[in-house]
Length: 165
Length: 89
Image (tube, rainbow over all chains, first blue to last red; front, side, top):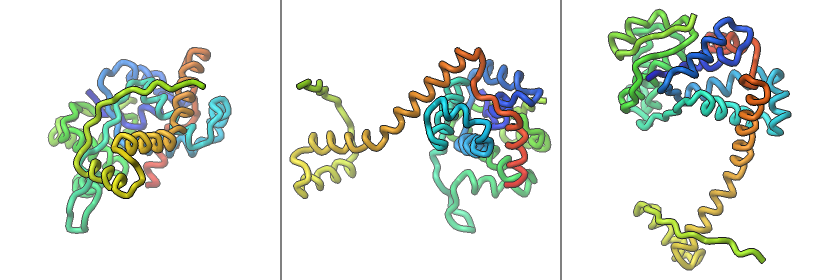
């Protein structure tokens, strides 16, 4: 029961990366795989920045850029049997005012983890999804930066870190 | 002329939604709750018709996968691009 980082999905699409086959294998073999809205955003963003390489697919699908990206993301979700889960708790009152909950929690853990913003947000999503009863016990990623928070994840969230190397 | 088959669908609505429907009837826009809901659902369906195109495209991607024998989306350097993007954010 895992939270799948965007990097694993993207690695499975990248023939120039030596981890591509292993990423595909993981996505096909893991049984319960959760993604968040941040995963969807990152996929949309990275696909849009590699548009020239995607234009052949877009032509075949006969869709414009926006719909092609949505179609690809939906295909990947179905292909790898990913479960998209949204956050039910919308916002949190902080000394800075009302802030969207995943961001508010990421701000709270920032000083402890010293991670990049998007990595912090992924951890925040894992924490919130677990609080909302998603049975996530593992984070699977191809992003080595998560290595620095391995202990935090295990001790504070009960999350085992699995980095594809 | 082809008559469309109409089916009955039981639906649960909260008081706020029902109150809004009744207000539309009170304004004379619709004659009944049934007519109002039918029309509002039609409006929603029309607005989301583009999703049928997306659904067709997803099915096409699965067909392409069968044709190619592998995932039809291969993008060199996309992982590096993602990780670089995380650095920029």
